[in-house]
Length: 208
Image (cartoon, rainbow, N blue to C red; front, side, top):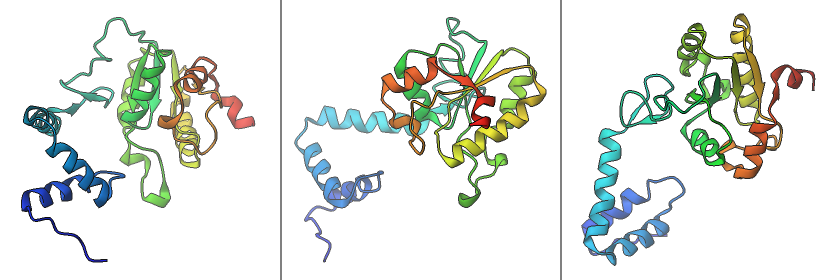
């Protein structure tokens, strides 16, 4: 099927850019571009400005690797957060998912992925060394593995469990309210919240 070319190069460029977004095919990109054409210019330019700001000014927290506007994210510098519990997650989407439950009030550490030899991702590719550095400070009493219940997630959790063995910590993991093979970000807030509240010692998962 021949690709339909619009009479406007500006429109074509916009469609091409939109179709590069995850889950957006060319037809969906065309619909979005046509929708934007019908909006007030202020709304469209505001969207463009927000995207430029995101690309140029967003950064990662130099402590927990969460998304931030400054060197330290709002969670790390929040004096209300309870600093004795550290929740280890795979990526930024998991922080957002857990925060939406309002059931966890500690701090986070974002690994930036999970160990996956099939995808060429090794422990050295993740933010594990910075996690160990935080453990050496001796500020935490509990580390919670909030990793997706997949083969790669379980492999990552077991690797971290072995690495953390030298520290006197309570190591827990989410209760299996989230089904095996599911991504954490897609769990509903109630299920994820209960999984956090009903977390269990990681050792128990090794015997199951």
